[in-house]
Length: 328
Image (cartoon, rainbow, N blue to C red; front, side, top):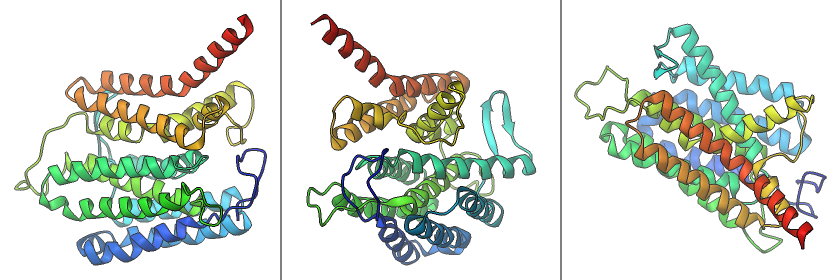
């Protein structure tokens, strides 16, 4: 059960094992409807089992941070080395194209770990982590569908994630006290891991030379489009770390500098806060799509600038409201 605390907005205990339902939805449906994915990526499912165990233990008895980190490193190594799911090319970002194998492995492992924890950090209000995971999975799923039937297993995986998240959101956004549930660390880690997996697969599609007969679209900005889709957890995590360092605090200290906390400070409800955040960052994704043929470095700068702007819009509104109230 999730206990009320200084950083929580609920006043009673809420069940926080919704991640178990998400796991079983994916674990049962994926081997049935996307069995090709199981053959290709058996390490993916092994990693999900490990994250399930660690997440449930943390949700029940609160594990030490280093133990969770060790588990995240293990699952990242499994998927990167075992299934060879890694970032191989940066498409010219900072002048870098193809990456050497060792560097690619290390960079990919770090990417998995960052995204696993980033999704955990945005899971602070009702509907945000689940709603944003739904949007990300839908965008990646549509992209896979348009990129040829070879990507069918990834389309199915995206649809399964969407179904699992929608079922969770039904209870997470419930107004009935007995029905309400949180995804907990189990759910946020699973979703962060799966979306890291799907984003790296998305980038890899545009550089795979092994299947020349598969119809593909040239997209020089593929890594930036992937960043745009995952912009909320990336920006929110970077922002809170930077703020903590500037305030001479540990980057790992908990605080209320997350975007969702700022919107709650404006007296918005959880649902409204989640809706506004998701809509703004969906706008950022739209910008990335319409400017996808722009120089990759300029596009990255535009996307990150819009991302950080979104993190500070609530601050501007809060200051403006205070100035207005002072004058009144």
